[in-house]
Image (cartoon, rainbow, N blue to C red; front, top):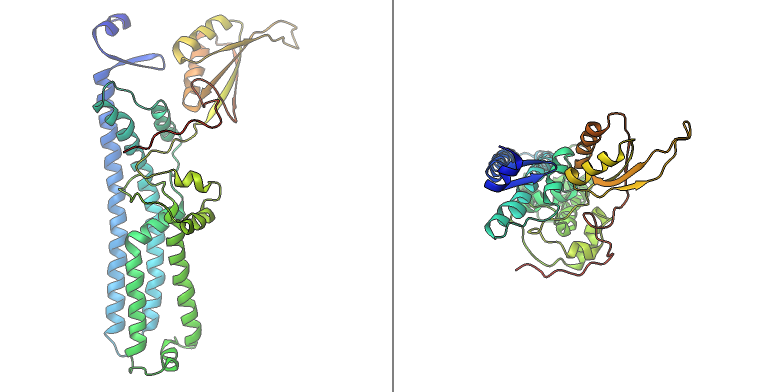
Length: 360
């Protein structure tokens, strides 16, 4: 069946020079969605496993320390360090989970939800954003946000219970204390004075809690149902320490339920070809990008060589190369990164776009 016949008889998804039936494209997207969902669930299970390890080791350490009349403060302190290691491992795993969950959210918000509200009109950059994420996978949240989020969700209470158990151990064992000096004496671990142990415990736990508080203002995660609350000035100030490149106004305007638009890598291509007309027409019809022809002269031959200039995104580079090689195998192509490409099909020329209405 020819393309013209297919277009007249079936709904066709036209994309970068080739055509797919709507049913074929939807089937591919459904399988891709299921694959990403499965991968996300695997990392979700790994997160739960790490939390289970932390709970079990904390329970075992507390039972051992409080079940003996001997001085076993060090067991609780060592377990606190072990819990911190589990928290760090879980934060790393959460970043991988969020990577795949963000792709799922992108398909849910810009493909499936658009299908439910005719006419089908997904965001202009959703396909580019998804393709760029597949070609160049990158973490969507920082290690600080992942660390703070997992701490507030699960590990906060583990640290509180461990601290309470350590204080209770110092008060009751080996004999109940009556003065602060006796408590300090019970806090010592071997040759390490009790004062030093207490100072270390306060500073260590204080730093963990400070990170948990400071990262409250970071709302880049999209893989969970997150609270929609107004950030306090304290949270915004502390969050700027962990994400200095972002203004407080930009952070305040974000919500976890809204997909963050990322700037796609933009390129500029220069094409030197004796068949500039056929190359330019192919770019216009297949790549759907504008082309400008410049006059050029070869310094070695002294002959005129038309130069085509076009702007494109990272995911279109391979398509451009195939277009050029099919039209003129002898062509010379230069692809350069662009700081900004402003205009139709790229970023808006307006430096301050009009604010959009908030979603209900």
